[in-house]
Image (cartoon, rainbow, N blue to C red; front, side, top):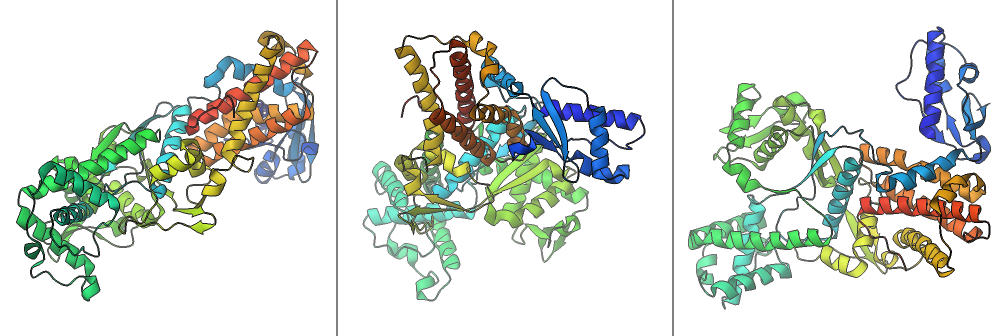
Length: 584
């Protein structure tokens, strides 16, 4: 209906332009559902937008639009309000066509081809494989998945990728941490470094290695710690100390070090993959940084930057002149010791994304990485790629509360609540919904007490209860040995004249537009808010009217309406990745 009104207004504007009264036609006519039904069903501010170019008062422009507005059997009347708003009042049964659309299109309702099958690579979560996923990671996983689902729904072709940072210093710290725990299991007296990974999972990995290899990797603690610089508790630098421990591990273990490294990585990655599978998160590719480095893409990237004149040498290091592209300072690509920076590999990875034929690359990352986006975009532009093809979506932190008390989380210190623990406590449905029910850039307080509540205060319970209630209505119909005649219901939709019915029809008609807006703005919370509104409208309807009435025409019409509500709820549930319970 909204699109129908937009088309009518566009036709009127084109006619006024042909008559010489308007010099330009806007690309988009804004028509919104009226907040106050006294002002109609829909309203538009188009006259206020056109007034300046038309050199007329907004109300005069509105009057001319109404004078040439094409007639429509779906409009009861059109009025001008305030300084020039145009309010549209629908005939009582104008909105009922949406029921027919929903019941005929079913899961296709809300889908469109606005994306024109453009290829979009979405990289999300990409947590360093140094420990189990915690509750903060869950927000990235849920947000990335639903963004992909929405983009697919409107005609894009998404490719979902996890970038495994398996070649950096953090992985060396993990390997050293596991090896030290392994030595302790071998009976060595180990004083654990301040900057090592301390979680119980590190001990579990060490136990697995010890069970498989016994004392194969054992050396004496005296050899490990001899002549190392002091650690932080003894007045030393914890970063220098852990690097010294890593070097000592490499020296003492030789080729065996890589075995410890690989076994540590494998254990973590198996856990992450299982976590994602259980959480209903699918990836098309798990992209390894180590495999990237093993190809020639990094060398080719550096050569391109050199040939384009965007790199220079200083103090023995190779620098990228990112300030030429708006960055706050230039960035090191290759250190004086010949070691490439993480930034260099990351540029190469982003170049590879576009070399694979993607039209758009979306990276979903933590809000603490906001300063990183400018330098990546600068590098992409220097490589001759339009930086607008690279989008960074920031996801804020999650704070977990239980009984009003905040839970502390630190991966390095081993004090955190894992995503698996959260899912076991509240379930996948609640976790998925809660993670995306606010804007991604907003900080999130995850209230465990609310998440587990079986009440209308819990939004997941509230919307799933609406679905279950509709299922119960059809069960009641069968128990009374009555049949629902869909064709008869569609024929009598004009009987749906109650305020709650009109409100439901209006909300149902907003679904396709909401999906487009949510997808193009990468905002899954629009979907959760919509489902909450739809559930509220249904519950109000359920509490005010009987559906199984004597009048067969009215009964079938109402059953058709609630069946449409159930279908739209189901479509929304599928996009969010939550279940649709038939009873609660």
